[in-house]
View 1 (cartoon, rainbow, N blue to C red):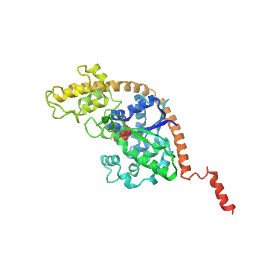
View 2: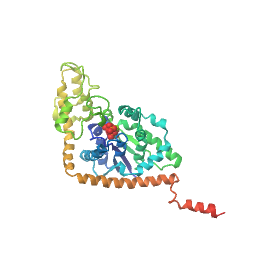
View 3: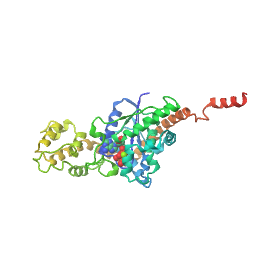
View 4: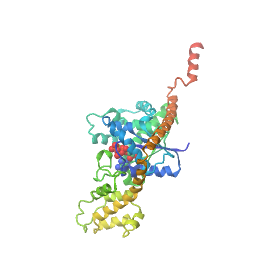
Length: 363
Ligand code: ATP
Ligand code: MG
């Protein structure tokens, strides 16, 4: 069997440029590389409900938004299977069995969940489903026997938790039932955790600090011009700092040398631009205008493709339905294999019946 990818996103909002550099751009490259036999892309609605139980309409609306973002970013449904998590009930059965292999204290150590609990003010009362979502993520990954999970840095503890479950499951129930996955992080450090336009934390749908893939030209410009730079860079002549300067962080994530020739030919590359900024004599407006052009070069083709798919909504739902059906059949095969290994396949195992006959009639 060839290599398999599983990754996905929560339908809690439209996808943003953090998703793009952290996972989506890589997925499209991997998809087009031809090196993977199967690619599964999951819209994690059940996971989104773990902290949005009271907002089902939000989740429902964002399924199609996320699907539109996928297709606009270049996911090809002929190659990649795009599906909806709740349409694959086998995942929940797997989750229940995996829960027996994980301790409460292990879940409490997950740093991503810890910070998400804090962010959502869940400290006093955490929904059980939210607390255990890393276990359901292990089901999502293993159901497809995925080797590779392209994702941002916040997913490292999830894949680590999955690896522990795989190890434990295979040790207890039989070697090679489940495939050991690995996370694939972006090569470029800043893409692993792109900050929000406020310069704080990570860009995140829940923090309202995003540039969305579907934002209009005008909105992107407004957001870029309002971005956080170096608070001590007051006059153009002042030396400026590039570390922690969000505009430069975004240039690190998006800029290619060819954009200099196209939009800012006074400089050969980002290093030269940074050097000038650090020396003094380069204004924030100039670098923001450049970043805006770079972002437009990346976002405009995505926006164009979105227009096409927005006119073909029934087709988008057909893609999701067909993808979910395929995903379910693959997950069902893995679940059957797991149940066989766990010895809970009572009716499929003729040897078991023969054994019982022998036990009672053979004496
Ligand atoms: P929510 O706030 O609902 O959790 P989110 O913005 O964190 O939404 P997710 O759906 O949780 O988005 O994440 C989907 C994928 O995108 C994951 O692989 C995650 O690592 C990646 N990702 C999310 N935000 C960023 C970011 N700012 N930089 C890099 N990768 C990111
Ligand atoms: Mg998240």
